Image 1 (cartoon, rainbow over the protein chains, first blue to last red):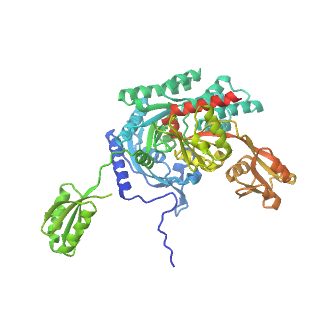
Image 2 (image 1 turned 45 degrees about the vertical axis):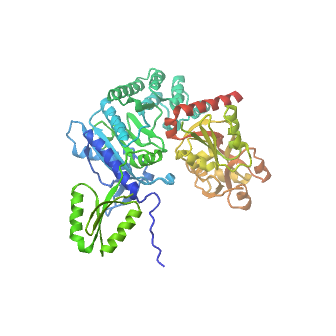
Image 3 (image 1 turned 180 degrees about the horizontal axis):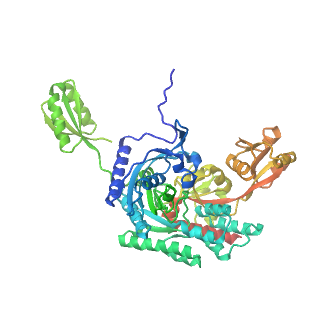
Length: 412
Length: 215
């Protein structure tokens, strides 16, 4: 016998019914917020040349990309991340623009990550990018958008964690640590493993691999994993940075962004995390993520990437974020919040004889902005039977005309 | 108040961890009853919930925030490769991950021969041979009694946890190379760490005080 495959491959899924409707509503709400800040929609292709997502751009590692070939033998990639695509498009179409460019987008991204085990390989992201603006105001605007969007989605308990990649980078640059050690340090700091950092530095000092690590640097590096929390963290971080001017600058930038967010009246949602690291190598400045209950990972991720557009031929500073819509959906449903409206539909039952009247009735209802389903049955008797069945299932009779019944029902 | 949920790896680690919590003044009478069929234990006073899970599942629970905190061996963390914050070394359950085999296998490791490696930890073994030693090997996953493999000729060497080495000695095997040191670790979900920062840090602080008090 022919065994038909009816289920979807691992990592992708169907979405239908209540869940699908909620997701659409959520996307509309988030999109409205992005538009309300004056961001213009942009669409980029689902797949692009490999170079857009290659090693140089610093996005997802090549092993986790969905790759295939076109007829000419070029390697194509399903987009794993919107930012390089948007950067490419912006560099292509807004070449001479010296004015800030505000773009927003939404769609699927594809990451072939084997260790995801049970996590989706195709997920929906919605995001915004602000280009040609290097100011702290730009950083703050994006963070304000994130907070506004999450609130409009119905979240109240969440925190947007702010970091700055330049803090860690400037510290290690000034020390001339070997690249491998830096990578190891990054991994440990990302895991908030302060005992690990200390142990590693001690071990390396013993074996003579790190002859000259200044005591101050050791202290900052082992403190980094614990440098997160409220505003007081910035004071500690600034003190630890000592005479490293660039690290001081990095902290100053975070202060400025925080002050602007106070003017927005949104600073209560903000916390700091100087040990925040991203897998994306293209980030060059502030980095932020939004966290909430019910989702095991960040629901929003973003940051500043001042050098990425240069790769596509335009020298432009930029900052952006994506909302991981699927994670946000998870969080909303686990927290039992989210302002989703019900789905009430008018069902018009009529017999074949009354068909013309039924069609007119449905048209009038739809014009009034209600949803109407027209159900034509063979006889009057069937109409009565079907009406009874619907009422038993919870429908309420709304109107009645000869041979036509209008019932209101909640559809999920 | 929202409960903080803590997942413990079943067995010795769980018993030792519970002793630590007791020293901090967090007790769970129900959990001590060896006949209990309950899966989850609550301490109302501190707003904590504990459950026991199989070791390799603890990182999974924590990654998906089904548990905020987990206590589990470093071996499991390395093997499962989950997205977690590894925040603390509890210092107990100390042992080593080693490459073991008969004396004769030592030369195979030196000569970069293409050998078979039996292990319960294919990720750790793979990472060690491919990325640290740059040696191409064939990894065979087994689920227990790994020491058997070299004896019956299934593999040349094994990668396994060594505590005292007595099982190895009795079977004519010895430690050939050391992969890494292991011990019990505290892991925390990345979101919980931000959302419940104060409570988690207080708990960790308490644990670290109990541990350093012991040393």
